[in-house]
Image (spheres, rainbow, N blue to C red):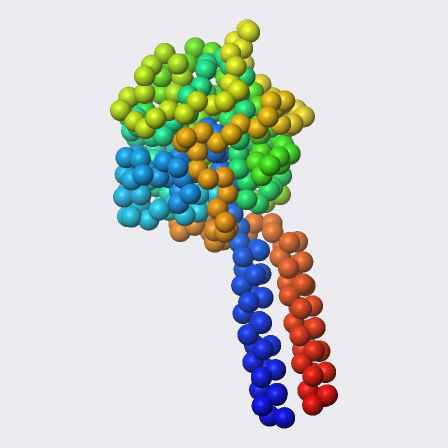
Length: 309
């Protein structure tokens, strides 16, 4: 009898850590980043196709050798639209977070995506945990110097594209608009995602190259498929009220894109992240309820087994 009880108790005890591990994996908070045009954090992350580039190696070295494992978790809590007050000049790509400071290095050889000024455009924003919110896309002004730290004044005053609560299609949001006319050479496409379902705001830098200049000493420039010149180019911002994906099929990953989604979600907050309490309570409660039910069934099974003995 004692041996049977000991074996049953051991089986129940062994099941508990496995269930708790499943809960931890299910509730880890990770959310997303642009993959086309590829963002710096996605390109240099562990799944990024350009992680071996000179710029990515320099970014990791600037981080003290720490890679960007949480490529989809570059976020700041409680910004409430005060982006220019909360995120300092020169730290736009890291959003002022120490865990991502290597992304702020000013250099002209970051992995880039080739675009056409005045063309229709769709940004692909890979998501690992969907949220509601508004995406705003900005581009640096003509004359931007990639060898200088990125400042808010370098960006256009208004976004050239915006979308609120776009649908997730094939694991990604897609934000469409028209690129401003008259841009040449190296630029930064800056994405701001203000969540309405959590208190968080996400920031991303994607390096792009417009026709008219050769890339200067950097990694190969990837072309964005399906980017067509506009019949009448316009620099006015374009809003996509329906927030629907572009009519063209989703673009295939380019040479500079990272693998679309890592197999495991990163931890709750990156090092140096301001304290945040993201609204993930509903899904956590469901998972904990499921765990409690499984534990109860295991206990009943053990009890019945012991009674039969």
